[in-house]
Image (cartoon, rainbow, N blue to C red; front, side, top):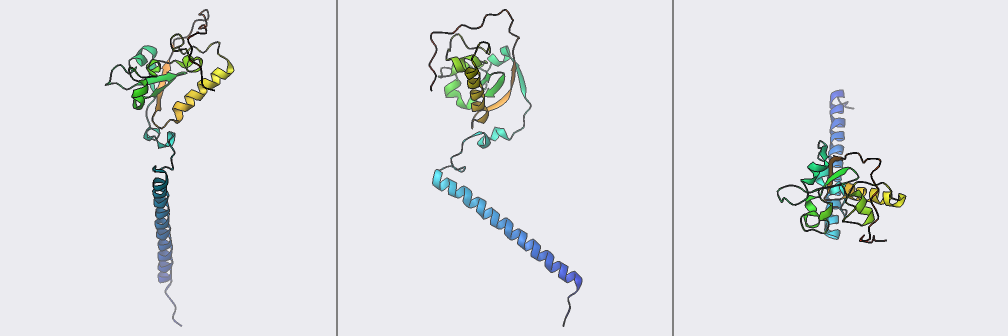
Length: 187
């Protein structure tokens, strides 16, 4: 009976392991390929119709957080087509340039561009409540502001780029009055 050299036996075992690993990688590649191809054939989307934060390329690009004053943020209100469009909600600044039709000059939501209008998001008063002052809002309204922040955080086109620094609101400043021209909220 012929015995194999110990070195030959180890080489054969190593080749079998390598072969098994490469076959596994090839199999995994085919599974991933069929997953995305099936998604595209069924939903006409490579991601099974998912459109959220994880399909936004800006989610994966690390950036240094930008800090704005209220005056600096106002420069990005959509009036200059060469500049991006930014809006803020409760101190967080988002780039909404890809929604220029909505937030740009003449757009339906252009009143939000270039400022922190957290109060108007939940009161529907787009003339008098374009302010970050949330004093006097109900708990449900504050939850509404959080809802809008999550909307921008998870959006497939928009992304957070920084923060806006607000001047402190004087203690004796009056709370914004409820307005009669408020746009009613959807239930």
